[in-house]
Length: 115
Image 1 (cartoon, rainbow, N blue to C red):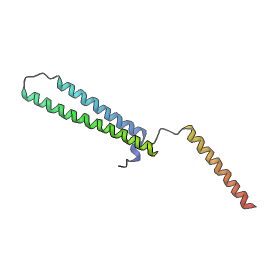
Image 2: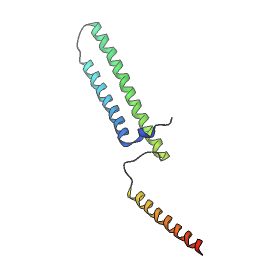
Image 3: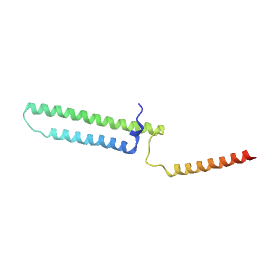
Image 4: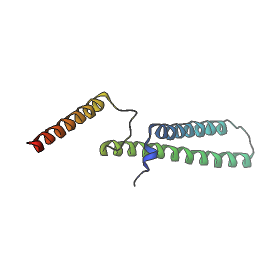
């Protein structure tokens, strides 16, 4: 499955991870709040049980999305498609040297053409 390159930006990845973690925490808090209900009413107990199941399913979905995000990050990193924050100094130096080499080759080619 090919992921849109715009979704591989650092801010998009951080937003996705933050949303997933927020969902995990919120759903867990919801389960804890349902567990604290003490009533002898069967209907209230049934509703609380159902709500806990819904929240547990939400936790599972959020955890699966985090695992999917990790898998996508690994694949993008292996393929060299992961957009990282800025460029490293070695990349800048390599680009500078490549430009210098290209200019020197052009000068050599021009000198060879004159002879």
